[in-house]
Amino acid sequence: GAVVSQHPSWVICKSGTSVKIECRSLDFQATTMFWYRQFPKQSLMLMATSNEGSKATYEQGVEKDKFLINHASLTLSTLTVTSAHPEDSSFYICSARASSGSLEETQYFGPGTRLLVL
Amino acid sequence: AQTVTQSQPEMSVQEAETVTLSCTYDTSESNYYLFWYKQPPSRQMILVIRQEAYKQQNATENRFSVNFQKAAKSFSLKISDSQLGDTAMYFCAFMKRGSEKLVFGKGTKLTVNP
Image 1: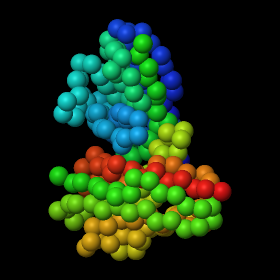
Image 2: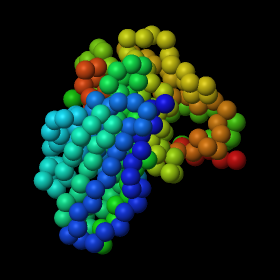
Image 3: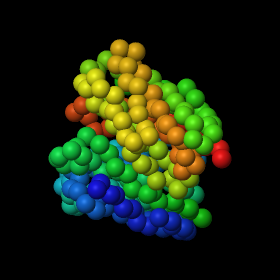
Image 4: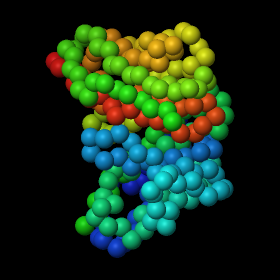
């Protein structure tokens, strides 16, 4: 149980285009989903927290107009990198936290998405 | 604010041996959770073990166990009978009860040698 998928796993795009990344909890309902960014050989940096049906809460320094987050259902959150530039190239990871039960208070992570902006 | 410190950037161990990864944290909270996550070369973050602060008993999951010392704010991970598949980055993380955010340490890169 507690499986989180992320799609796509790899994306290469041209500078100026927008890229959408999907995060799904496959076998549980997630009240809250999180989006992280990870630079090489570093720890995870929280970008934003999204709750189903409400606006995402962004961490300080993260541009909300650049990184659009939508949490339309209890199993799906999307991150859209708008007008991507080479400096947005990174590894993006989502996680989901269960709504209730024994999985509560634990974040389960997706496999990540490597974004390369040319 | 809470902080998590992993003082060992890199460690190595021979296959079948035991290794302990250290983690200390700083908090004024009394009710919280602690986690160890593993990130192998595939970069998929995998939950290894979870500890609730109000439980005195140390959590165990097969070959993985923790030594939770609440007064010392220490949460070390012991891996017994190390396997090649244990090669990964290991992150210690803290979460205050009622908060949604994980606070991560910088990680320890563990290499299991054949």
